[in-house]
Image (cartoon, rainbow, N blue to C red; front, side, top):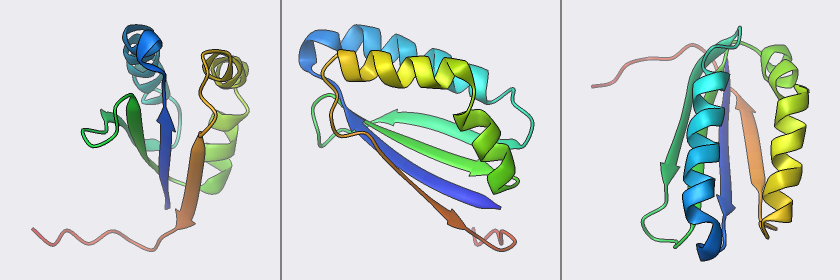
Length: 100
């Protein structure tokens, strides 16, 4: 399993558009093969900040997602909106164990 954590911060002028874009991206991504979780949250401590949490069956599945033309287009659109801090980190994880 692959776990991923991403962050990005939108300028205040683009927040309504950002919310819509991120909501649409999450809904589409959840339908992709190998996607176990794709969640977007607003960061309450960082104005304009968003957090992306992902779980994928494999790195191959995540790479297929990242190579989708729509994802590349969205990244370019986000950069055009003034986002310059997009960061995504992924980790390989073993089997999940529910602790609560």
